[in-house]
Structure formats: structure tokens, C-alpha cells
Image 1 (cartoon, rainbow, N blue to C red):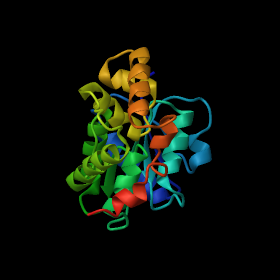
Image 2: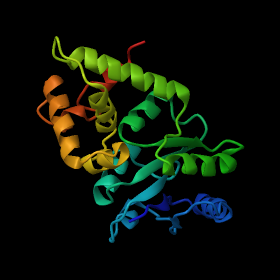
Image 3: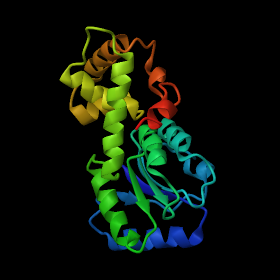
Image 4: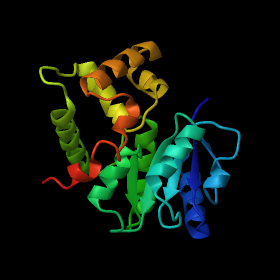
Length: 219
């Protein structure tokens, strides 16, 4: 089933602004759903993949676990966080990026023009994050590998690709689709990665399991 777009926001002005922006962006080849006022409303059946626009200004909850719950209910979903200017540090964006949030838009003067660009990018399988966030993410992945990888072992190029998806909470099905390989092949790579990183299962790669706080504190 194709992906749809849905905002989760309890702020009526934000919801109306998003509806107006998306109504003028006719190039989106996807369904645009009415905004959900809260998580419970967004997670009502039926379940299908969506690009969730998460209004951090009105959602008084951690967007990382929220994205995890939405993904569990609607596998294949993507996430774009919308923040008030200056409310989210680079460290916070890195943490949320690990949780699988694909992009960040701040409500500055040009946000209404930026939002459709961010949506288009994410729908194409890309991300919409600041360069410094991507750079820090790469450095932290390297630090994780240096700390966890068995001596004398290294990841193959394909294993490194799969690890990038695993760190961002992607399912085997999502990895299979993104890399155009079978789920059976994904499982094979995941098993090898976990073995080389001395981890019992993929839960050991959750942000709060592999020392995100320690990594984030490093220069």
C-alpha cells in the first residue's frame, strides 16, 4: 500500500497551515489525511504506512518513542519533526535521528516553503537533516564500531549499509525494500553484524542501549 501524509498536532493553527501548504503542493502523488489531534487518534485502525508530520510544539511527549510506537502500528512509516526555532539542539536532533525520524523543519520565516521540500525528499527515501547532524551521526557510528567490533573483524560494505538502517530502527522489510535485497538476505546480514558487534539481538542497538549519551558527550 502506498504511503500517506498525516500531521499529528493539537494546535489548530498549525494543522490548518499544513493543510493549506499541502493543498497547494499538488505534486505529491500520495493521499493527504486529515490531521490527528493526538497519538491515540493517529494510531486508530486501519494500519498503513504514513509520513507523519510530528508537531513538537503541541505534542508534549518524546518524539523518539512516539515515532517508534507509530512505526510499530504502521510499518514502513516515515517521520518529519516540526519544531519552534531554537527549541531542538543538534544533540537532540541526532538522538531523534537514531530513533528513525527522517527530517527536521523549524518554524522560521520560510518554513512553509521548506516543508514541501522536506516532504518530497523524505518520500524519495532521503533525509532532511542539517549537515552537522549527519556528520555527528557518522562519527558516532564509527565510535560505536571501534568500541564494540570484535578484534580482527570488520563489516563488509553491505553490512555497513544494513547497520545504518538498524541503528535508525528500520525493520527487515524496510531494509529489504531500500536495498533491493530479500528479507532472508537482510536477516543473514543482521546476524553477522550482531555477532561482530558482540550483541545478542538488535535491541542492543537502541539509542539508550549503546551509550548514546556517552557518545554525544564526545568532542
